[in-house]
Image 1 (spheres, rainbow, N blue to C red):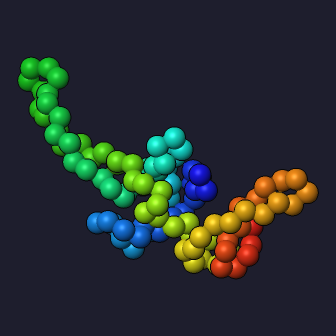
Image 2 (cartoon, rainbow, N blue to C red):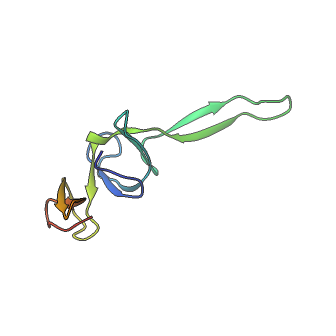
Length: 101
């Protein structure tokens, strides 16, 4: 997976299209990520004890990696990611400006 935790991404599809945000969790086996403030749902919780009130809780749900693009920290543009091998080490690189990420 080319996107990692704390990367800044741009959502390209769905109800949150055009929003830039930070990745909070990555699920490589499912190919999904959780992003702060994106794809948030409201869940109604029952009261656990008598006399307590129920709550409406906002929960961020994972979105598919194919629905986001990484924002390059150097050129500040959303684009694709490539890999570069330098002296046996593998680095991510921006395809637009060619800089390492």
